[in-house]
Length: 156
Image (cartoon, rainbow, N blue to C red; front, side, top):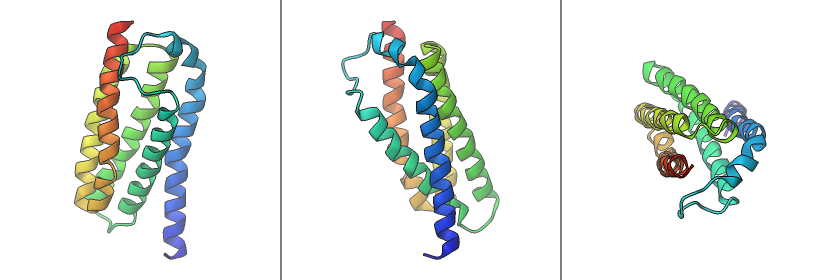
């Protein structure tokens, strides 16, 4: 791999993991309230969340780099725009859910995020199929998060 590609992958990973890390740092304030909230039986142990999210943010960074390095074009530009939008939506969801305990609003925001992820996958597939495939775990995890968010909303 040449220096340019290494730099693109490094920057892309730094952006994705940076957004995830900043989100975790900012939402740490709301964790006491979340810990006290009623949760559904299928809620994983707390240690699972940072592990899964770190992997997912790394996969996001790798996918975005693959698409960025693909030939320029409308599909690439649209894919990267939707990538940026879903990254922002992901960041905002954490604050809505954990810091503000706005579980109902966060649920609908998470639906928006799910749609953005699906659109990102479709657009990434038009540029680099492997980049799209790397996002399938993210879509599945957010699908599970929809269930968890909905149940926390209903139970609280």
